[in-house]
Image 1 (cartoon, rainbow, N blue to C red):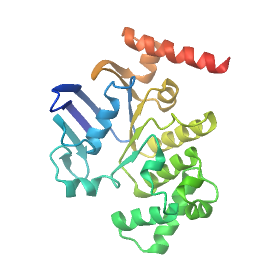
Image 2: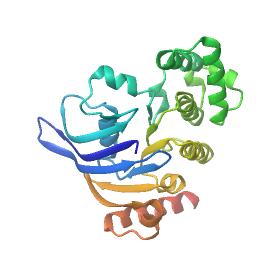
Image 3: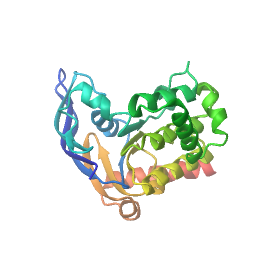
Image 4: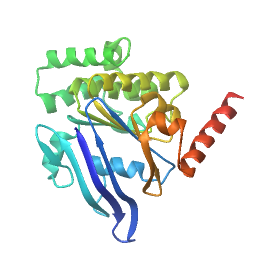
Amino acid sequence: MVLKVSDLSVGLKEKNTVLLKSLSFELDFGKSMILLGESGSGKTITCHAILGLLSSAFCLKGSIIFENSGQYDLLKLEKRQLQSIYGSSIAFIPQNPMTALNPSLRVGIQMLETLRIHRRMKKQQASFICRKALSEAGLDNPEHIMKSYPHTLSGGMLQRVLIAMVLMMKAKLVITDEPTSALDVIHRNAVLDEFSKLKKGGTAILMVTHDFYAARSLGGDLIILKEGEVVERGSVKEILEAPKHNYTKELIWAASYDRKKKDA
């Protein structure tokens, strides 16, 4: 077990509003958990709670246990302790990869700096690891990628740069928020293939999405959220083939209708 979320609830202190209610799940090495729902369902709030990105305006209850040479409740760790985990053992791939990279620095400099901070290795060794990771993430000409600025690369290429950073850091858990929403079909399929490879390598993946195609491609376990509450859970295959809750059926029908319109 790499991650265990127990009775996680999130609310706004001033408004006394509950945004997420008693969410629980477990995620093991080499497995995937998908949180799916409409905007405002609580899926992104869950990710931000795990990543420690919520401000003091939010009230959090429950526990988030992460396995990292011992078990730690992420909600109880100090900032210094969290910083040693995030970026090395836990990696985040946001919807817009540009927000995770400094636009004024070349990709290679940022990758090398990440290794320097978390792995403390010499530049020559770090440079070799960076090139190897970029190649493994499906990017041709790693030397060119490392010399490039983020804004000169496509969205799909930037997603794979972040995946390469996951590979070189050997992260135990990857959290990704709507990773395919801004990609065309070719880049979407390529990125999903890379996530599948990460799983086969033993990395656990927590994906937030509204895309049933992405869910089907990644597979694993699926939780359907509506207004901060779980309405259905099970394997992706089970839910897509035989949804039980009306809300899930509506989401699947809407996704199918949208796809037919695009294909028309």
